[in-house]
Image 1 (cartoon, helix red, strand yellow):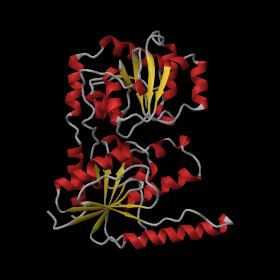
Image 2 (cartoon, one colour):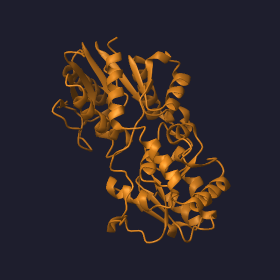
Image 3 (cartoon, one colour):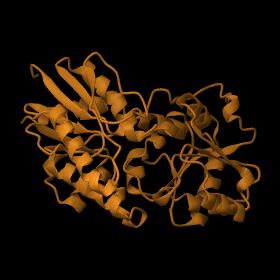
Length: 378
């Protein structure tokens, strides 16, 4: 045990995300780590307006850094100078970092840091699917991410699947990489009564989809399979989270004649989402890639049947709990939906899911992250 362990956390994710899996991770584990280790002191740095609240604990402090975001005209003349001023202000406030640990919430690295650094890799989607993320801004992000991971003394990967992807794409020392799985909130649980609030009232039975729908999420395959499914008129498709339905998505659903069966719910809280999991006939997870997949744990914790694409991270996280399908085959997804509804909320399979969920907890994630911090000193 160290006399004092000081960790500087770049809270950039709280400036980028209104809500999401990455910010949830840090909000869950930072206070827990402080409760586990009384010697730990965490300072969260922010350099812009926050989109959500920072995690709170007696041993967590926050330090806002002044940020200049307006350029004089002409912009091409003043923009480089503004960037230099912001970077200088950041270095001044952060300090040298000697005997401290740097942990960024989203792939940042101080230009000059004399201390230790830890990077968390949530997935490798930008590297594995560059066709979805092209252009100078994405190229710059990939460079920044690579730099952050390569410079880190220790790298946390949220799953073994992600660890293997990092090893293959970055060719790092395997001993530097640590698998620290995510978890899900205790809010997600099995309920006896599942009355939904008026904002999420759904009268007919429904399938549930949670999260963003673009790119590698494979929503198009789900939409096409659903349009061909013989039970689509009696079973709705409920979408939770993500952006508003785009013009292209609306056009697709109208072409498939499913627009009236699809309902989008945005900005709902976890308690309402828990009730949706408890009410759904099945949770459908059609992604072609995920780094971890917290919605899988949420669905299993609620005893909700799962229909999921057969990909390495889902198999790692959920085991044999889901009914799997080939993410490229609409017919295979249709068959999986039929199987899920035929099986229903089978108590035996629900118990398998609950037992699997119990192997994950935010307390474990926090404790394992603390061990990674300590390993940076050895």
